[in-house]
Length: 292
Image (cartoon, rainbow, N blue to C red):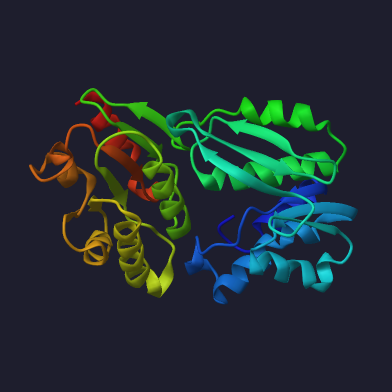
């Protein structure tokens, strides 16, 4: 979803009995004059489009999801909050490194262990939401757990590659927002290898706050513990300003590829996150790193 009305149109084409919202973030904020509330209203089109008596799951801790649940257009459907203090939630989270993660789903009928091939705690949240909704709809819990365990990372969506010189690359090149960059950086830090670094294309559709958001994202990456940053695109300098020392900016991918301080300067054995807006085609950096 990137503009108002997109989800509504989909629910008109295929009316829903159930759905879930993983979070209300800030992606595509440029297209929403009312900011995060506008994004919540647009994602709330999913709830409004549910058939009467339908059900939707959401993270219990997400304030904007709770806001959606209170709106008049959501009264015809049942909200299923998942998280702390709720009948459904996730606990005993464990990182399995490059193999993925594991957790225990709390359910009204008892705990259910689930193991994922997907890296990162954000994927555990997503899996817990999907599992809770499936079980609430009457599916067998053990089959739900087995099914989730078969889901493998797709290209640009969390696929992990080993590198010739050691270390690994986390390919998250499909798209980027501030929330998703930080979630993937946390996943990177759980992987084995040397220095944790990032190669980022700029983010788009963030409106007039874009420079500030890029600076804040760079600062947050440094605070998480990443040691170096390579950035390119129109807001690369803002990433670098926020990250401060040991970060370099390039105007475009060609400069990042060809400059001696660019991709070839990433140290052997590093753990590398590659991510960026679809516009910047950061998969080109993945291709270069896997072949050099």
